[in-house]
Image 1 (cartoon, rainbow, N blue to C red):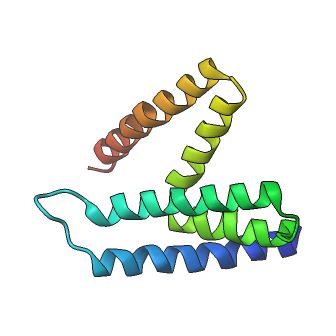
Image 2 (cartoon, rainbow, N blue to C red):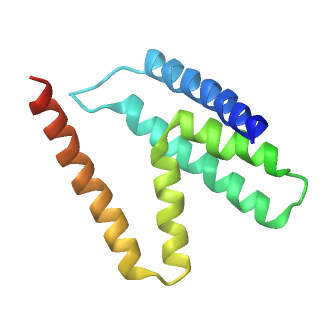
Length: 121
């Protein structure tokens, strides 16, 4: 258990550092948050490739999957995890759960940010 937590933490460190590096390299253009957009899309591509690879290849150990999938991708962007989980719900035919999760996450996330902002003022 401790080893798993350390693997996720190490991956999160690398992912977070990568996210920061992308934000340093990119600039907002016309107010559009290009760095966050790019990180979210790249994170989705990365977690999708990892997910696809692990379904057909057994050389990815559970520890490496924790480091890369949960740690690195999660530290890089949690949007990738959200997107993977949403796709998995669609693939399983759980359409109502998918809608609740996807719409609820976006709407509740925006409301929570607004509430946190108002409470902190």
